[in-house]
Structure formats: C-alpha cells, structure tokens
Picture 1 (tube, rainbow, N blue to C red):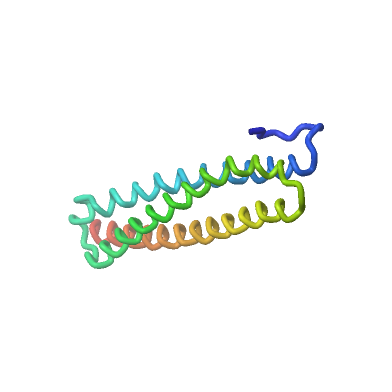
Picture 2 (cartoon, rainbow, N blue to C red; picture 1 turned 45 degrees about the vertical axis):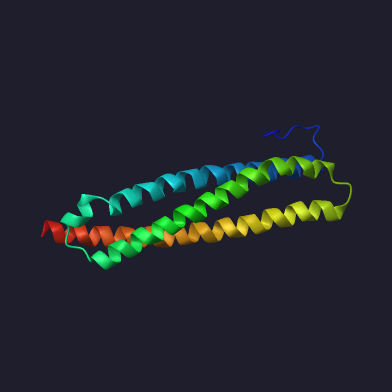
Length: 140
C-alpha cells in the first residue's frame, strides 16, 4: 500500500493512492469521534448530571442519541477498514466499468460519512448547550 505519489505512478495508481489516503483520513476522524462519543456517554452517565438541575428526560434522550451514534460510528469505521484494502484491487481493473464501480462505492461511503459527521456535530451541539445550561443553573 503506497501513501505517497511518485513520478513513475500511472494515473490509475495516483487515483487509488488518493482514494486510500482519503479513507485513511476518514478512519482517523471516525476513531476520534468514537473517543468523543465515549466521553459524552461517560458524562451523561455520571453523577455530575445527577447533581445538576437538568431535565432528566433530555439527559436520557441525549444519552440514547450518543449510544446510537456509537453503533453507527462503529459500523461506518468497519466499512472503512474493509474498503481500504479493496482499493488495491482497483489497479487490477481492465475496463472503465470496474474503475467506476470502485469510485462509485467510494462516493457512497463518502456521503454516508459526511451525513454521519453532520449528525455527530448536531448532537454534540445539543449536548454542549444542554451541559452549558445545566452548569449555569448549578452555579446560580
């Protein structure tokens, strides 16, 4: 698996390298998101939440949202891990249809990841606002 483009690489090899690098970047981002999700789950499951004057129903809802995100994130990460080695097969393609199949699969995965990351941001923002409000009430 090559990560740097060299002068001797063909256009097909360059495209494969580019796609592999993008998938590697997604994996790094999804790994970090997994850590963030665990952090929020720990917070919402902690005694800290019980001590603040927050709405318990909202707290449980956010906890459930992060549990769902954890499962989705795990599944997408597994998909990336399976897809990355398959990109080496792209260099073996003999026709444009084969190339397009890999590129289309990559685009579908990209859209799935982008949608997931948008959802992660939205739920993290809700959690941030919820926690900020709870802390402010606690300090008053």
